Image (cartoon, rainbow, N blue to C red; front, side, top):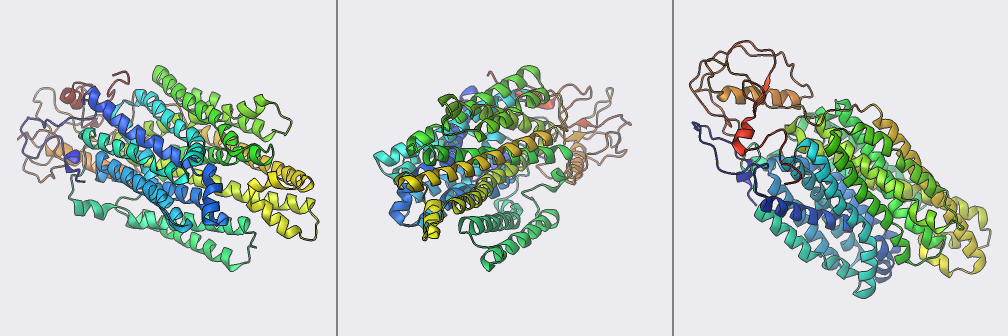
Length: 634
C-alpha cells in the first residue's frame, strides 16, 4: 500500500526548470475526478448506513445470542471507534497520502463488516463493530479532505453539500434497509450485502486517487514512527471508560459508590490526563493538534460540532422509540419516521453549499438557519399520543435541515481560518468533536432516559413484584405491546415522559450550539491564510527562488505548528547559497545560482506567488489557480 508517489515534491533537488509530470488535484481529468468522488462517496454512504443499521436489527440479534443486556454496545462500539480514530486520519492523509489513508479506512470498515456477518457470539459481534468503526470515521474524514483538495474554498461548500447527500441517505436508509433485509434474509446478510460495494469503492480509489500533494516523502518506517499511537490509545481508553461508567451507572442502576462505577471513572480521568500530556509534549504528529486549541475559531467550531452531533444522534436513536413504545407501531414504521430527517439533511447540505458558492459568505446563512434545529427539537419534545400526522412526520424536518446547514458552514468557517497546509489536520480536528458528540449523544441521552424511566415506573408501579416488572420493562422496549392493559398504560406513560425529557435535552444542546457560534466572524471565501511563503524577487534582476524559499517556508510552517502565525513584516536579510542542504520534499521550486541577498520587503509572499503577488506558480503548473482550484461545475 505504498503511497510514496503521492507525497513527492513538485520538483526534485536538482531540477533546473523541468517539472514533474504527475498531476495535481486541480489538473486531473473529469473522468479521474468523478472516479475519485464515486469511490469516496460510496464508502461514505456505507459508513453512514452502518451507523443506523443496527437499531432495527437488535431484537433479532438479541434473540439469537440471548444477551439483550449487551445489545446497546453494538451501536456504542461503532461510534466509540469512529470518534476516537477519526482525528488520526487527518494525520494519516498527510503521512501516508490521500490514497493510502483511504485504503486503510475502507479496508478496516470492510473487514469489520465481513466479521459482523460471520460473528458467532455477541462478544465477537461487538468487537467486529468496533473494527468497522475504526475505518468508518476515516472514510468520512478522507472524503472531506479529498473534496477540499480538488475544489476551491468557495466551491468546496457546494461539493461538500453533495457529499452530505450520500451521508444523509446512508443515515436515513440504514434503519429501513436493516429491517427489510433482516426480515427477508436474516440480520447477517444486512452486513454481508455491503461487501461488493466496499470492494468497488476500494478499486475506484486505488485506480483514480493518484494526484500529487506536497508532503514529507518519508519512508514507510519513518511514516509509522510519526503516527500518534499513544494519543489514539489513551483517547480510546478515556472515552470508552466514561461510556462504561454511564452504561453501568444508569442502565444497570448501580450506585455511584460502587467500585464498578468508581474504577472506570478514575481510569477515564487518568487516561485523559495522559492523552493531553502526550498531545502537548510527546506525539510527533498529534491527533489533536495543540496549535488549533490555542485559536478561538477552531475551538468554537469544535464546540458547535460536538453539540450538533449530540442532538442529531439523540433524536436519531430515540425518536423511533417513541413510536414503538408509546404509539405501539412496528419497527419498520418507527424507523421510517427518521427518513424525513435524512432527506432534509441532504437538502440542507446542498442548499448551504450552493448559497456559499453563490455568495462567498457563511455567517448570515448560519445565523438564520442555525436556529431551525432548536425549533424542530422543541416541536418534537411537545409530541403527544394524540398529535396529528403532520407533527409526527414533519416536526423533525427543521432539525435535520438546520443542522446540515450548520455543519456545512462550520466546516468552511474552520477551513477558511487555517492555512491550506493544515487543511487535513483541521478537518480531522472538526471531525473529532463531531464524533465525540455522536457517541456522547447516544451515551448521555441513554443515561438520562434510563434515569427518568426508572423514576417514572417506580412512581406508577406498586405491585409486590414491582422490581421485576420495572426491570423487564426497562430492558425490553418491545415488550410494552405485550403487557396486560393496566401495565401497558403505565409503561406507555412512563416512556412518553422519559422520551420527552430526552428530546428537551436535545433542544438545549442545539441552543447552546447556536450561542457558541455567535462569535465566529465572517470571512471572505475567496481568500485564506497560507502557510508556505517565500521571499519576493526583485523585478529587475529576478533571480529564481531556490532552496531559500523552501527553508523560509519550512520555518513558517513550524511557527504555525507551534500555534503562532508569523508576523507579515518579518524578513530575512541573508539567504543561504544554492549549495545549502535542502531535503527533496522542501525543494519544490527551481534552483539557481542567484545572489544570496534580497531587498527589504513589506510582506511575505506565498511560495506559490510571483513578485507581483498575483500569479501562482501552481496556476502556471496546472493551468488553473491554486486559490480558485477546480470549478465545481467541471
